[in-house]
Image 1 (cartoon, helix red, strand yellow):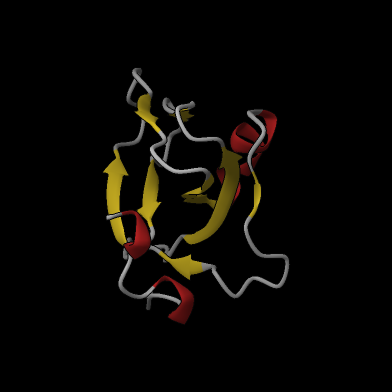
Image 2 (cartoon, rainbow, N blue to C red; image 1 turned 90 degrees about the vertical axis):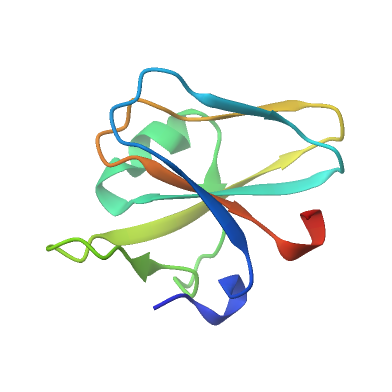
Length: 102
Protein backbone atom coordinates (compact mmCIF):
# COMPACT_ATOMS: atom_id res chain seq x y z
CA UNK A 1 0.00 0.00 0.00
CA UNK A 2 1.02 3.62 -0.45
CA UNK A 3 2.53 5.24 2.66
CA UNK A 4 0.30 7.92 4.18
CA UNK A 5 2.82 10.69 3.43
CA UNK A 6 2.79 9.81 -0.29
CA UNK A 7 -0.98 9.60 -0.77
CA UNK A 8 -2.21 12.08 -3.36
CA UNK A 9 1.20 12.36 -5.05
CA UNK A 10 1.56 11.82 -8.80
CA UNK A 11 4.21 9.59 -10.29
CA UNK A 12 5.94 8.57 -13.48
CA UNK A 13 7.54 5.16 -14.00
CA UNK A 14 11.02 4.94 -15.50
CA UNK A 15 11.23 1.47 -17.07
CA UNK A 16 14.04 -0.82 -15.96
CA UNK A 17 17.10 -1.10 -18.18
CA UNK A 18 16.33 2.02 -20.20
CA UNK A 19 19.53 3.57 -21.50
CA UNK A 20 18.34 7.18 -21.50
CA UNK A 21 17.82 9.01 -18.21
CA UNK A 22 14.83 11.28 -17.63
CA UNK A 23 15.74 14.94 -17.16
CA UNK A 24 13.54 17.74 -15.87
CA UNK A 25 14.02 21.40 -15.10
CA UNK A 26 12.94 22.31 -11.59
CA UNK A 27 10.51 25.25 -11.54
CA UNK A 28 10.56 25.86 -7.77
CA UNK A 29 13.39 25.19 -5.32
CA UNK A 30 12.77 22.13 -3.20
CA UNK A 31 13.22 18.40 -3.00
CA UNK A 32 12.71 15.98 -5.87
CA UNK A 33 11.87 12.36 -5.06
CA UNK A 34 12.62 8.98 -6.53
CA UNK A 35 11.58 5.50 -5.42
CA UNK A 36 13.98 2.69 -6.23
CA UNK A 37 14.20 -1.01 -5.41
CA UNK A 38 16.14 -1.60 -2.19
CA UNK A 39 18.66 -3.78 -4.01
CA UNK A 40 19.51 -0.93 -6.43
CA UNK A 41 20.18 1.85 -3.91
CA UNK A 42 23.95 2.08 -4.41
CA UNK A 43 23.43 3.53 -7.91
CA UNK A 44 21.30 6.45 -6.69
CA UNK A 45 23.45 7.05 -3.61
CA UNK A 46 26.51 7.32 -5.87
CA UNK A 47 24.63 9.96 -7.90
CA UNK A 48 24.07 12.13 -4.78
CA UNK A 49 20.57 11.05 -3.73
CA UNK A 50 19.87 10.47 -0.01
CA UNK A 51 17.17 8.54 1.80
CA UNK A 52 14.10 10.75 2.22
CA UNK A 53 13.30 9.12 5.56
CA UNK A 54 15.58 7.39 8.05
CA UNK A 55 12.80 5.44 9.76
CA UNK A 56 11.42 3.71 6.66
CA UNK A 57 7.97 5.34 6.87
CA UNK A 58 8.13 6.09 3.12
CA UNK A 59 9.04 2.53 2.09
CA UNK A 60 6.48 0.56 0.13
CA UNK A 61 6.37 -2.70 -1.79
CA UNK A 62 6.00 -3.08 -5.54
CA UNK A 63 3.26 -5.31 -6.89
CA UNK A 64 5.57 -7.89 -8.47
CA UNK A 65 5.77 -11.55 -7.41
CA UNK A 66 8.56 -10.84 -4.94
CA UNK A 67 6.85 -7.77 -3.46
CA UNK A 68 10.05 -5.79 -3.99
CA UNK A 69 10.72 -3.23 -1.25
CA UNK A 70 10.99 0.29 -2.64
CA UNK A 71 13.03 2.99 -0.89
CA UNK A 72 12.34 6.71 -1.41
CA UNK A 73 15.29 9.01 -2.08
CA UNK A 74 15.44 12.78 -2.47
CA UNK A 75 17.69 15.59 -3.64
CA UNK A 76 17.38 19.30 -3.01
CA UNK A 77 17.35 21.27 -6.26
CA UNK A 78 17.35 25.00 -6.87
CA UNK A 79 14.84 26.58 -9.24
CA UNK A 80 16.10 26.43 -12.82
CA UNK A 81 18.39 23.46 -12.18
CA UNK A 82 18.12 20.30 -14.25
CA UNK A 83 17.65 17.06 -12.35
CA UNK A 84 18.59 13.75 -13.91
CA UNK A 85 16.68 10.72 -12.75
CA UNK A 86 18.90 7.62 -13.00
CA UNK A 87 18.39 5.15 -15.83
CA UNK A 88 19.76 1.73 -16.75
CA UNK A 89 18.83 0.37 -13.34
CA UNK A 90 17.54 -3.17 -13.69
CA UNK A 91 14.32 -2.62 -11.76
CA UNK A 92 13.54 0.88 -13.03
CA UNK A 93 12.39 3.69 -10.79
CA UNK A 94 9.37 5.76 -9.87
CA UNK A 95 9.57 9.55 -10.01
CA UNK A 96 7.35 10.98 -7.25
CA UNK A 97 5.69 14.39 -7.67
CA UNK A 98 4.25 16.19 -4.61
CA UNK A 99 0.75 17.69 -5.07
CA UNK A 100 2.10 21.22 -4.46
CA UNK A 101 4.18 20.95 -7.65
CA UNK A 102 1.19 20.32 -9.92
